[in-house]
Length: 108
Image 1 (cartoon, one colour):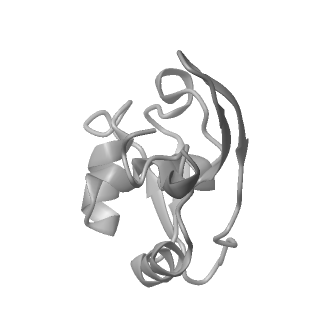
Image 2 (image 1 turned 135 degrees about the vertical axis):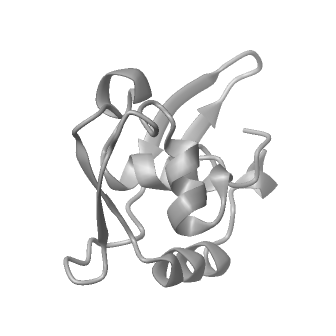
């Protein structure tokens, strides 16, 4: 919750309790675009490492949450595996969505 671009602030609504996070309800602010999306098959180098994929395609490791959410991946160990094809939104759409959306950090 302390990371400005975490999936818990940017990617949805989160109940915050004193010692833990509660329910997290994801938002889907970036619609899929079959013409603009990048299709990427996870190889051994990227398995369990969405932050590297985010750096490679979006220029920022801290946007790993966006790739996970965009592909409806909850468990990195079980779902971000070799051979899985994921979709990555175009960097221009990601930048627009993030810069025009208010964060929830002011509520914390």
